[in-house]
Image (cartoon, rainbow, N blue to C red; front, top):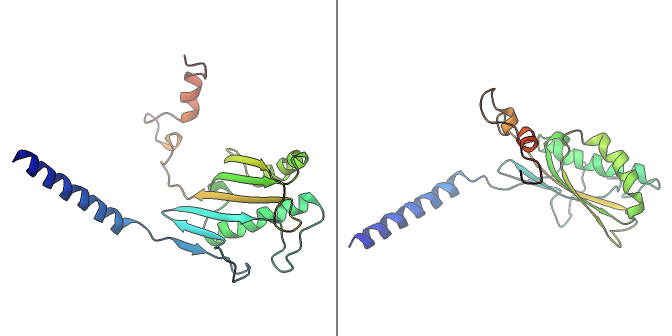
Length: 179
C-alpha cells in the first residue's frame, strides 16, 4: 500500500516537473540577419534559452559569394559574418563561449590566430581547430560558434566579495598535479 502511494506521488511529481519545464522552455528562434541571402537549407543562427548556435560561416562575400584571395581578408570576412549573426541576436564576440574552426591548410594556423585574436579578447572562448581536406568552394576556413548571453553573477568571479571564489583563484590553490 505504501509502495503504491509512493509511486503515485513520484509519478505526479515527475509529470508536474515535466509540464513546468515545457511551459517555461523557450522556443527556438531562427536568427537571420537581413544581409544574409534567403533560401539556404539552414538557419544562420538558432537562439534558444539564451544560447545562440551559429552555423558554419566561410569568408564568402554576402553579395557576390566570392572568397577573398588573401587568407587574412577571408578570415576577417568570416568573423564579420559571425558578428552579423551575433548582433542580430543582441550579442557580441564577448558572449561567444565556444568556437570550432575547420582549416584546409594547417600551415595557415598562425595567420588564423593573428586575425582571430583581434576579434576575441581575453578570456577567449574555448576553441577546437580541425584540419580538413576541403570546404565548400575555394574556402580555406569555416567557423561555427556557440554564444550565451550571461547575466551578472553567473560566474563565481562575478559574485560579491565574500561569496564564491573565482575558478581562476581556485585553480591556483589546487595545481594540476592533484595536491
